Length: 289
Image 1 (tube, one colour):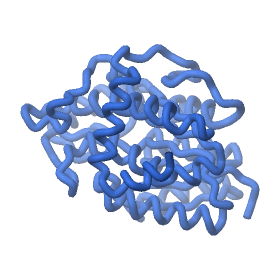
Image 2: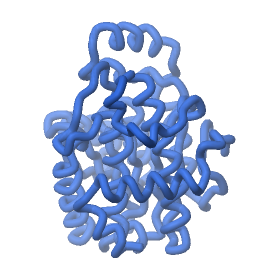
Image 3: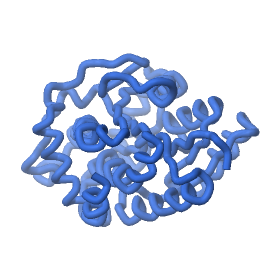
Image 4: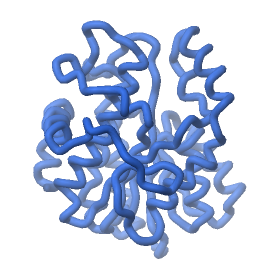
């Protein structure tokens, strides 16, 4: 077992996630690549090792829209950590995300943007909490400035009464900040720190995956104005290396102001709702507290 610190990155086979994994590997971290498919993970690992021949890269794949897949991937990560990493997870980057043009649900019946952009990271974090505590770890969520223009639809979180893809995306990003705030309140005293990163407009393919013609067209035009993922990745490294930073919401390696909707009342309300929606993770979460 080496002395390298281990960081798991979801959505790490392309875009921001891959750029973060590449930067971490170059800085000597052991990187756990979490991707949608075995093929994507293998290709990402090959590229990372080509750039960093001495890097330690492990791959885990699953469709994190569905909670059974989150639980399976979490179990595989825990097994790997126990076997090769002293049972410690120094960092978790909850970056996997999606955009959906129309209303689609997970196996549990949850709207897919809410399921992947919010609940997947929520549940994965809880599943890996003992390993994060052991390392006094850090957890990062990929957020967005779009959270500023949203309030939680408490009476219709899945937007069943009038689905709009942009509204669903904004709500999921607000949920990321509320989750980080709630987790800091609950698990911060035990040594784990939680942050949100606003990468800005980045030239990635998030709006072109499983979307309809209109969303695909709009995103394909908009992404051309975005910066490269490597620029956004620097803030993730900033939060994972060195001393712990003061603040919750970061962009360009600096703490920023977030929406006033990100308050303790809303954070606790979403935390309790999310525990119920995650079902299998609820008992483990209570035990980790």
